[in-house]
Image (cartoon, rainbow, N blue to C red):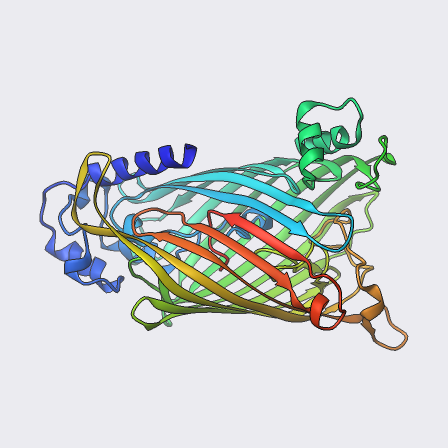
Length: 489
């Protein structure tokens, strides 16, 4: 019901502002960044000046369509503009998150966790020279996060190709940790008992912190490659951990550690985008190269060393026949003094948490999208559209796989409390006289995708199966079910 209300409100907001004013110049700029013909575009008549929309705004919004917060818990959701809306209405509301369920041949099954959040962004403040973003997110297996960012496009920047930004966030795992304690307590609170009944995973450490970052984004003259350079300072304090979060009887070994850490992150991202929006999909190619160096300044009780993280990704989407489409992603990574959790939705679908980790890895995702239903809508919320707009429902078939080098002595995602799964440990291929070993994965599955023409979120249902469990290990396979408001990649 709540999503229906959000849908009706958004449709009303977006289309009530499409005023009766001709804009030949801006229309041509829009058409350069879209695969739609004029007969397919319901937004041909509107008033761009009312919202400060100009050529520079259009170019800026189409260079990078992903909204970054520089926080892995949030950015894994792949929060993306629908430029069918953004190019004409520069106030963006995007809900994100979903639920994740896992079932396997061990005693640990049920909800892998859930997350929910929203992002709101105002793009054309101060006559197009500034923008503001605010975001809140709650993840049952992560943190509660409040994030804000303020962007400035300086006057000396020709065509607004330079952006200077500042962001800050506050995060805590206190609610999730409290629910986990209630999970085990025989007389725990209502939410904890509910989580226990549903077998929802929660965070097993009580951590609170804040971060502040600043950066500059520059459009380079070669091929409009976007360079994003930033520096961030992060402080956090960990009070208590539960060393065995899945014990049946509470109190589990609750341990007061009273540790704090302060570290500085230096990040660089290069993005080359050749994507264009059509009725439902972002078609074309986008290449990203990402690097981050993390330096601990305060290690109060933590065995923390400098870390380096490098990633390169290529996402390509193509229509192969009418609305039939193929989406692919190649993702490679290299880490020093840390490793990454590559299991489950957003990485290799169909895996249990901690099944697939590594400090060096190469992943591939292939999605085949088969159109099932194409719904044309003439009006909604008492608003008559100028042209028909679409909801397209796809049947999705996917294959994911990867290979990685792993070492269990390394922390995962810069957190020494991350859960590590030792399932199928006997099948690891170790290097001689080393703690390093090969880790590999192969999964497949299917689901549904519903892409609306005029909203910033979609609906996705995926069911992924760990094929290695069945084919090689002859076990009952692990199955992952995901319901989400965001696309995988």
